[in-house]
Amino acid sequence: MNERADDSLTTEQRSVLLQLARQALERAASGQPGPSPCLEELPEVLCAPRATFVTLTRNGELRGCIGALQAVLPLAEDVVLHARAAATEDFRFYPVRPEEAPGIEIEISILSEPAPLEYRDADDLMARLRPGIDGVILSSGMHRATFLPQVWEKVSHASHFLDLLCEKAGLASHAWRTAHPDILTYRVDSFHETTSADR
Image 1 (cartoon, helix red, strand yellow):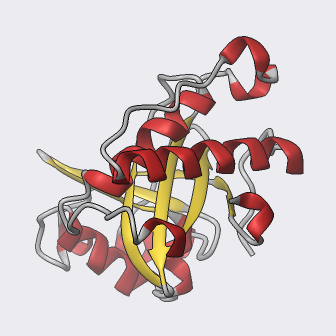
Image 2: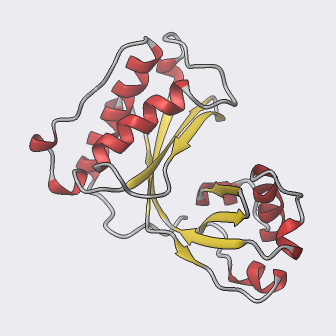
Image 3: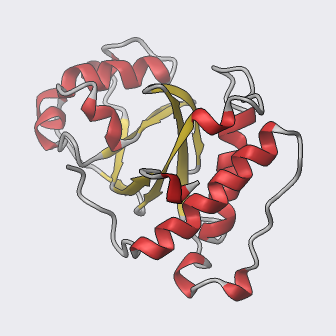
C-alpha cells in the first residue's frame, strides 16, 4: 500500500475532487468548457497550490494520464485541468468519446514536493528506491520522465522500473547504470472512484 503524501485529505474532500474530475472528464469528452471551481466555497486545503496527476482507466487498462510535478495552481483547479487533459490531450490515446465517459474510472494522485535522491552508483540507487512508495523523476541532459508510485504495482523490481523510466525519457534502457542521471523522488496521496456515489 502506498505511503501517503503529507496533508492527506478527508473522505469528503476527496469526494469533492473526484466529482470535479468527473465533471471535467464528461465536459471535455463532449467538447464543453469547465467546470470552474468556486474557490471561495471550497475548504482552504482544496485551494492551496498542489501538483496532481489524473489517471483514467477503462476495464482496468490505462486510457489517459496527465499531470504536473510542481505545484502552481490551486488543488481543485489543478485536478480539473489535468482531468480534461487526460481525457483529450494524452498523445498515446485518441480523445475520450462521450459514450465512453461513464465506463472510465478516475484516479487522482496528489504529489508531495519532489526531493533529490543522492546515490553513489547504480547498485546504491536501486537500494535507495522504495518500491510501492516512491514516485521517481529521472533527468539526464534534455531527457526527463517520471513514473508515479502506482507503476510499482506492475513493475516490482527497481532495475526494470529504471529501465522503463529511461526508455520513457528517450534514453537507452540501461542509461541509469552508466550516465548517473539526476533522480528526484516524491510520494502521492492517491484515491479513485469506488462507488456510484463518486459519479
